[in-house]
Length: 116
Image 1 (cartoon, rainbow, N blue to C red):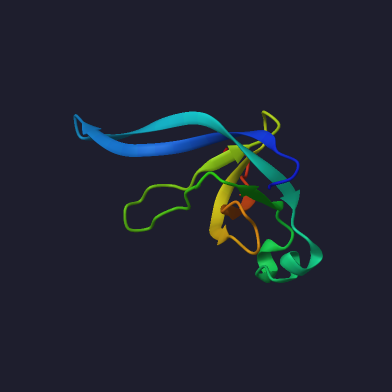
Image 2: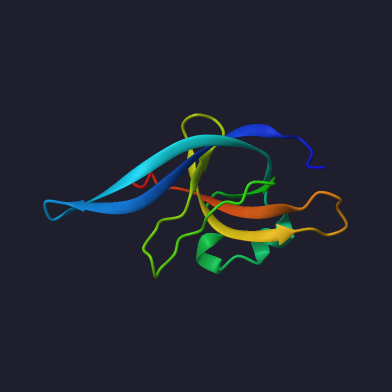
């Protein structure tokens, strides 16, 4: 069981289509349930030195979220819990350690204003 479930907004870019020589990507907005938590001290220490000052968090959820894909150029999912601050999905790991419900541990980082 995942504790402290809240509703989290999800913004996912779709497949690009081409029209008149221009690429257009669709964006789908939906929501899912998850437990949003700050990273602990050990997790922050594991981040590369230049990223430790960034606003990172983690989500535990049964919803499979998407990281960016360099080969297909599909961007990572963006998530939001407060209606204004968007975070990008950095890492998704199965988290099945001694739990009866399979779920994922998702690491996220706050987007800069121009990226949100």
